[in-house]
Image (cartoon, rainbow, N blue to C red):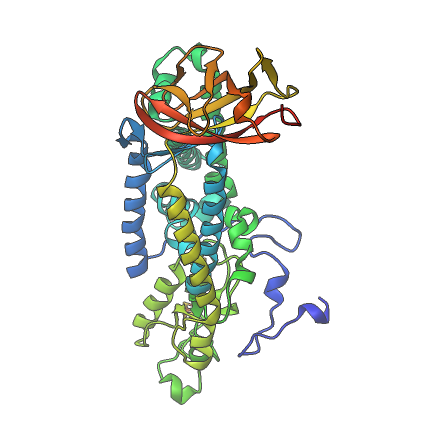
Length: 477
Ligand code: SF4
Ligand code: SF4
């Protein structure tokens, strides 16, 4: 290991050589399987309740409809997204752009203030892994020590039965999750058709379910914590998002060091810290790290080590909180959580973006369109006194009713002649297209390009006004 890679722990002088390799990979580069001990304690109980809330939402949201539409749908193949019952199309890309930027600023602000609170408490990957699949594993194979024994044991009836039961249960759960995952993309009605109609009619849908099931099964049965430590971009960005004031799951090295085996005498008399080096915090860690080494990218903030350490503190009549939610500054200097200049800057930015986003959402039209002049044609002479231009109109209908639309020239004394009939029918949640001429008397044309306003009407009600221009001859007649 080079000198450059050997850093000093900020306060207690622990060598940072652990940063040279992943906790889940051995010296030969092979995967080290993590047998995380089942946590018990206050945080684990609260997280269990939160996970029940998450499961209730995850498995019920696809069934909730508002005005005949799902509350949420993310139909990526058709580029159609429904968020809180409102439909968004690619034409809403500006709203998407602002939403994405607002979300990124929110994530940066939230992480700067609260570290990986999201990962530990509400990230679907952590919840499914730790609160569903891991619990099923404990149920079938027992706690970490029994799992290790089972792994080392010869293949016999018990081992085959347990392994088979676990993997069948894992695949079944992955299959259920895959179905719901697909329901978020295509909607429950379509999913129901795939389930109930002859398989030949839905080869693509069945194939998608099998692919998703396989991916979820592989992630939760084999890939596990590596989704967080190797794949997740949010996890890898922690080093730039966190600072010394961010609230993280942290080991209080000021109080804990120098660590040493438990002795009955008071720690002050032994000139020792409160850490009794019992490794309980390491044994429960689902990513296999030792939080006493300081903040690490692999820490998903699951709080299992807080519970494990609190249990040891209770057992040895020491004060709880040797591992707790705290900032580096809080531990090093005893300072309270601060609202820093960086956080204030992000907050102002977030308020501005949220305001802009609200404005865009409030003023967003349910029926909208674009008008373009036909390419390659400038204008046509109509008799001796008029000029016409040919246009194409594309209309998008975000409502759940079919909308019959007519066009009306709003700001010039001309007329519109539709090539495909008077009314443009635009289907619910669909798009319509038509062509039409605008004919203006020559007396109304006094420049090369004349700006026009065209109203879209449903019956007598004007829905929106679109703009285009009219191309006339270069010189005055
Ligand atoms: S260090 Fe603690 S909070 Fe972080 S992943 Fe491990 S057990 Fe969870
Ligand atoms: S659980 Fe607490 S006392 Fe035990 S090793 Fe970890 S930090 Fe030290």
